Length: 354
Length: 217
Image (tube, rainbow over the protein chains, first blue to last red):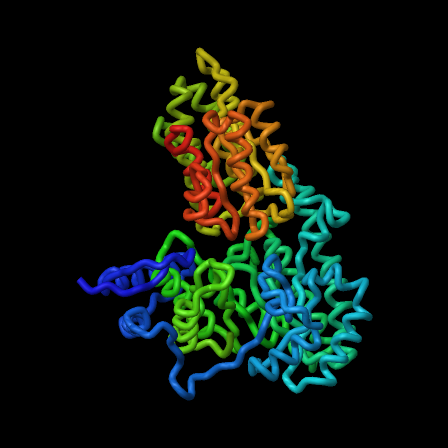
């Protein structure tokens, strides 16, 4: 029986028959539909996915006219960071690395970011970041974002002044854990609004609140409140929101935004709140299960993201890379997998960007 | 209330995370002379199992899971009084848990610590950024049968391999079962370093831990 080369969610090469591929495509889509209470992919979409996996080419691409724009998170670290920072360790300045992205890689947009990649540590060095951004803005044409994570984890002990919910909850100190998260929201909003305001002052084209929700529902709430305030103060600065996972963790469990409980929201529900807050671009995340095939993972990811695209009134730039968006969890995900995930996200999930 | 109604009420009280209702049902069961173990095994435990499922599906959240657990513990406390041979130390097993040195990511590990307590494990949570020697010392000190390590980064997951070697060199590897997890960790990695189990998420980790110590969920 003919089998086709593909991968597991951890990147390992495997072979699957046509029937096995289709069975996993259907199962992955049904899993997403069950979890998110959303429709499964239809027969034609499953066939489209199957065609991608049976395509003998190592690299696949979208049809002409289906090209989309790219936005970047984690700034220039892909080039300047060493392996410990998921980069290739080329000694460039950040401005040079932005120029390389623009002029050599044809990046549609680019992002300046600090190595710490969280708003709290950026606050004391924001003047230096303004200067660096200004230098980059003066020597490039592509829209430039400044990005960092809300990262509420930095407001909890031992990095911050508040009790750590991860320590308090297992001890049964629920009231203290909830209060710490509520206070962290206030402090994070203040830091984000301060830093992002400074970015807007020097003419930054946009802000990227990346890996939002990493510390749970309080993290997401802080981002939404910060967006609201920033949009009222700097309406012309674009705001992109990238998520941390497919599902908002309920470490608090009771936090709401505009009457909607944040814990447990999936991408198609998250995007509506980002819109209400004033966000301009939304980056959904769907996590890869390393124990399942790529056919299962990609079908599941596409099912979630398609529902998100259909619900969204703002552009969707899906997160696609190491362990997200159907790509294997691998430091540098293999191009055969990434290109297939890309085509599926564009042609089935109808994303506006990556 | 009939026996069946009591079992249903016990289950519902745990799912509702209602400690008052749970202890009230337990007292009613004692008053009616029901077998306490039956009420635990067929009432409260299925309730807790459903809480775990709701958590996994994202419709119940960590603080509620803890409250549900507290409701069950309180109710079981009432029922234990009526047991002829009280079994006070009801721990399923003991586990040493921590995030590998150099890694400060502990949200997932914290969720696991909570769930393991909920399922009756005695958890020695060493926290985050834990030196490998601390895992070993805690194992020796407590005699725990399980060691769980978490790593979110490719740069710290190598610590899990070093931990396996350290446990082996110290002559305690055969006395413990090791479990690994964390965002970048995979079954392949677990197999490669010789860990006994890998879990994709906290709920799966609990199931695997129960399997390792020979308990049904």
